[in-house]
Image 1 (cartoon, helix red, strand yellow):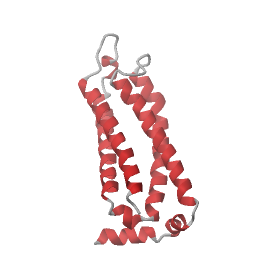
Image 2: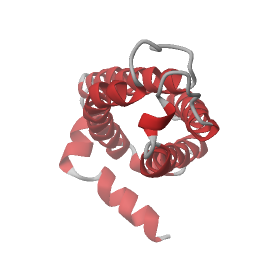
Image 3: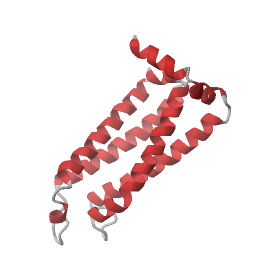
Length: 165
């Protein structure tokens, strides 16, 4: 299969070999990855809980997103880089791990959900943030999907680590 050759090539790169063979490198990369994921999920959860009307009700959703989302993106970039480095160290096994594959699908789902919300749901945010207005069901649905997707992503990531050996 063509994908196997790509995975084998990736796993044989000098950086992947260094990560796989060094007793300290993988744990350090994994620690940074976990910290980045905590920031991603934490910041996204703050926004999602605001959209659901559960927390941060004293600040507008628009302002909250403007203030928090840059931190989310920075943390996501770190998580993506560190995750890619860990993946490269054992690409052939990660690539065929069912939990890891499902995690990637959930990441895509979370991304699509976010894109749809920002393209369509956020358009008339000023209207539904007016005093006495209610957050639309579409925004609450997007927030719920986001929370469920990120809990699944974290769980699948942990499960992947336990099924690799």
